[in-house]
Length: 446
Ligand code: NAD
Image (cartoon, rainbow, N blue to C red; front, side, top):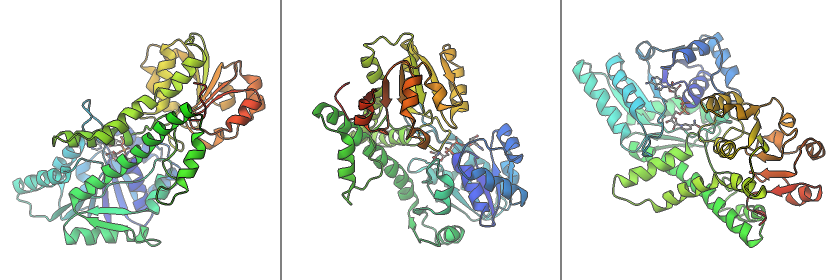
């Protein structure tokens, strides 16, 4: 099969790489010339476990190429994936301009029949727009190719994206065209040998399924964050409550972890986009608004714990921050709670020493634009961050933070406070060995 993937970000690059694993020939297009040049040399623009090996071996086998030229990439392609970004606008709406501009380019550049597949997360009706843009351009060119536009939303998790693509939970194919459904079934068959979880539905239903899924995940997190706050006020440990709830098969264990608020490039923007979709139809999406509000509030929780502990005297305090990525396994810091926390702490006069296994380069770039960039320092080892620290805050639950040597931590730190934003540690044990422990939803000490 000859495949073009437009967009070489977290979704596009993983899609392109994993499609080559089954022997497909893939050309991946990105507008960013530097990114394309680096990828051609086998250099990864993102951290994603297992991705580099696949990209390098596909490049060497001649199955994968990168280009800035959409026109050359889509010429005689059987399938064209659209995987460009759809960021949030200031009003919370989804910015589909990159998707629509790709649609215009496709209408001008396609040279044969093709299946055009939208992987980007887009509001209901965007597939209809993509289709009419392409058809309009083809008409103007007097080109009578058969082009089906399919919605195939992406469900991969950053940090496990390759595994998710290779063995998906489910694949959603949104199209009413029998031909497109069959072609999508053929393309994905090699990934579905262990379970045949391909669901066919209408295009608009597929678009909505993606948003509804992310909104549900966000709702579970915000719900647990609210329960966690209540637990703190009722002298209850939310960790026991979480385990007790998760043992119910109807509820399950996933996405019940209270913490520092959800971040990343998907949940915050997709919840807001769904609220906007409701507003555009005069609907008040009251549950989703609360989910979002709760999350905004949750991003303050760790700062508030530090503020109260130090009686508002954060000026000159040295705060060690473990974890910058919005979750473990990725270098993605978009909407990461750590950024918010660090900004507030620095504004309050604190100095930050931060460590993250893979997200430090992105974070350094992020803070470089702030006048106080010098107050945020990065170190190469978690233990180096805590030397002389008045407090340690654990923001991202990387595995290597789960079992630190508390004895050496205590010796290295100046203060005694550990704010455990992910409830990784045994609160009683830490208190017994002399730390002032603050988890989320576990005590009423503030
Ligand atoms: P990203 O920002 O990492 O990558 C997008 C890429 O598209 C960038 O490299 C950018 O240079 C390129 N691009 C933008 N406009 C272009 C154009 N006109 N032509 C060619 N290239 C262009 O974004 P991402 O995280 O990969 O997300 C892509 C889409 O997938 C979004 O709609 C997102 O909501 C959705 N999604 C993301 C994830 C995730 O975990 N990141 C998961 C599921 C769905």
